[in-house]
Image (cartoon, rainbow, N blue to C red; front, side, top):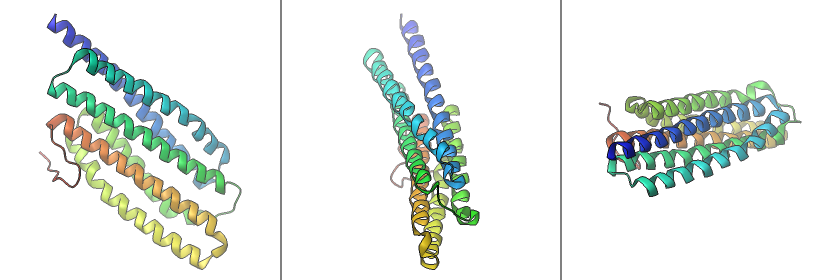
Length: 227
C-alpha cells in the first residue's frame, strides 16, 4: 500500500512538473515576443503577447490547486514537501515574469507608431539577450535539478543589474540630447526595468533548485558555493 501511494505521489508530481515546464516555455516565448515587439515597433505582436497573458494566469491557478491537493492528500514528508513547495514558488515567479512581459508589450504598443533609430535599442537588445539566456538556464536547471547551473543563474543576476544601470544612464543622456524622443526613451527605461525584474525572478528559480536539492535557503545574500 505504501509503495502504491508513493508511486501515485510521484506520478502526480511528475505531471505537475511537466505542466510547469510547459508554462515556463510559454513564459520564455512571451518575453522574447514582447521585446521583439518593442524593438520592431510591432503593435500587432505586442497585442498577441497581451492576449496570451490570460493563459498564464490560468496555468498558475490550475497548478497551484494541484499542488495544494497533493499536500492535502499525500501529506508528504519533509524532503517531498520541499519539492512541492519549490514547484509552487516557481509557478508564482513564472506568472510574475508573464506580468513583466505584459508590461513590455504595453510599452511596445505605446511606441509602435513612432520613429526610433535602431541603435537606440542597442542596450535593450543586449540586456534582453542576457535575460532570456538566464531564464532559459534557470528553467533548465529546475528541470534537471542542476545545482551548478542554478548557481551560475544566481550569479548572473549581478550582470543584469549592471546592464540595467547602463541602460538607464544612456537613456537619460538620450533624453537630455534629444528631448523630442522623451516618450520613447522613457518607455525603453520602463521596459528595461521589467527585464531587470525578470532577471530577479530567474534568480529566484535558481535559488529554489538549491533549496529543493540541498534543503538550503540561499536567499537574502546567503553564500552560494559550488560543489
